[in-house]
Amino acid sequence: MEFIYEYGLFLAQAVTLVAAILVVIAGLVSLGQRQKAEQHEGHIEVRNLNEKYRQIGDSIQHMISDPDDLKALRKQEKKTAKEEARQAKKARKKKTGEDGVKRRKRMYVLAFDGDIRASATNNLREEISAVLLQVEEGDEVLVKVESPGGMVHSYGLAASQLQRIRSADVPLTVAVDKVAASGGYMMACVANRIIAAPFAVLGSIGVLAQLPNFHRLLKKNDIDFELLTAGEYKRTLTMFGENTDKGREKFVEELEETHELFKSFVNSNRPSLDIAKVATGEVWYGQKALGEGLIDELQTSDAFVQDHLKDWDVYEVKFVHKKNWQEKLGLAAESALEKSFLKIWQRSQGRNNY
Image (cartoon, one colour):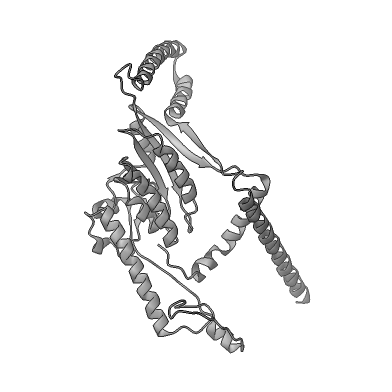
């Protein structure tokens, strides 16, 4: 028993030490990131998806085709490439008024992978700013949204970024392959059209907040806790103080107000929805969501992109941060800590969540 006790004590000390080191490293790197923000802002990367899938097709064709047939095909492709180059030259002349040939329509593909804090919003902002500088009449934007929701203000900003596309009169499609619930759906509903995979999860038009309270535990151990505020409702509920019925009522009132704002936002963007029916906090799979009017079509983002490859120029746009080794180490430390304490944080945080 003594050995087990000593081993447990050693293990607890080791875990505490490692956690402390990770916190210190994360803090130092975070400070360095703020100090070097201007030098490491990142850049926009653009990939031509037409070319990507053309190369994939060529690789497959090279493996399965007869050599003579492949030679004839390559000859035809060269001829086609020359014609396309000639058409492209005409399209460039069009901008100088020398010719009336129109360029092909373009679709820009963006991706939003959301967490609780909607931290991908900064990347989305940069990508949308870049795209809006290039779009012309007839172009469209596809945004692939994946998110189970998170903080109210964070997803409110993310939805506002998508609204910039709509405000510029650029057709916007949102594709949901896995999940766009709560704040994720709030983003999706901004689009002119929402497509989703048959088993994608959508909805959760509701608000939640949960908060543990340790007041009785502290009281049992004769530990005092004081919370000083100015303003009757500066703090309605607390983790360590004694909560009151009045504070709970005010907290619930704030949740209801936030829910009303959420419902109003969704209803203004998708007025055909029976908002009273769908704003219950429930979620639906794609097929059912289509019947409820939460989406417009069952289709994956991959199928949507491939439908446009023949007649459109399709570009994937991504904002990429440049990271030095210190930043990479800090991100690894932050990720380890976040995974360890995420569930605890979710249960103890007191902010409203979409």
